[in-house]
Length: 133
Length: 233
Image: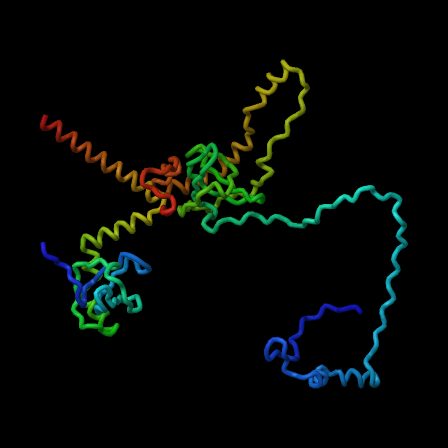
């Protein structure tokens, strides 16, 4: 099983530790064996240890250490946001965020909806059992 | 000397650093106009003699000196401030009561009384909680709000909830127990009417929101996996 996601210039990664937890960043340069120079549209370019990054499948086409404007343009061209939000990893994170932000009333409505759905499924199952019996 | 209440004036001698003024004594003498005051007064500083002290009434020596020195407690003029209402709690907010007979019940907040306690109602028809006072500390404020327009709660205050004064009974044993049983459970009609008048408007606005009625009828409880410090209310 070879590696599929490599650390390279333009690799999009998710920050999994620290202040910028949860942000999508682009690897813009490699500093040494452990650290990368990392940049995102809404943050100041900074160094990060690879241990703080989780690589994603997304890669954009940039030169080493691009200017901020060029980086933004490249991200727009590759449509990183849309790719991320349509990937299963990205979708999972969105769902987690939504679940965490539910109100007490929302959680109650969710419970009612789950019960309703389960009821429908059970009634269909009962029908099918009856048919086959 | 009688001092009038003057507005504190900016000093004429600004500090260069702490302890060192910009102007010397002689310069300050000139700046303050002391030369003008002297000139006005004929070459000397005006002299203000002490005002004759007001006549004090003759104090007679006390007739009685107590044998022991009893220490008087210090004066405490501290007035407790009214409890600050949390910003998340506004009239019409749904609250979760955490303790007491109605723990877990979701209730509508009406207003804060002058004692600091919160006035809430179920509404009674929905979850059995009457007009009741509840302490802010035993309540979680949710972000769900009920439309509160048109509801009038001005007539309720702490006196409304005071216990009715019981008549003193004679201590005859047989009569004592019988009399107690009779007086216990009657809730006066006015209180029932007050409850209805507040609740009808509330129930109307509650029924406009789908599922809100069943929400208020249900009790809150923690389930497996729910972490209170991570829950958003």
